[in-house]
Image 1 (tube, rainbow, N blue to C red):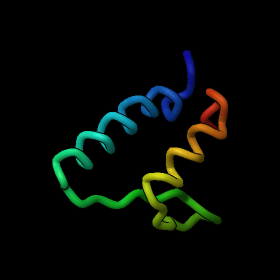
Image 2: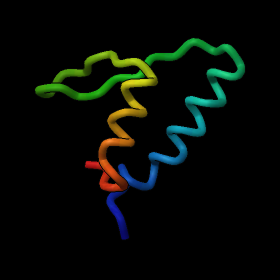
Image 3: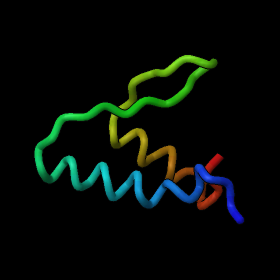
Image 4: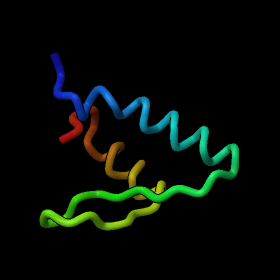
Length: 56
């Protein structure tokens, strides 16, 4: 079974798209050196895409 964070990627993408279509504001954060840092949805998608299916 793949790690849980890999399993949520499709749901994360779907949720971000849904909220965007509805015009609902939201923020995305990634953990950097143990601290949350706000990133854009585009950066989130780049991170996911650059993993090539290996979401670590």
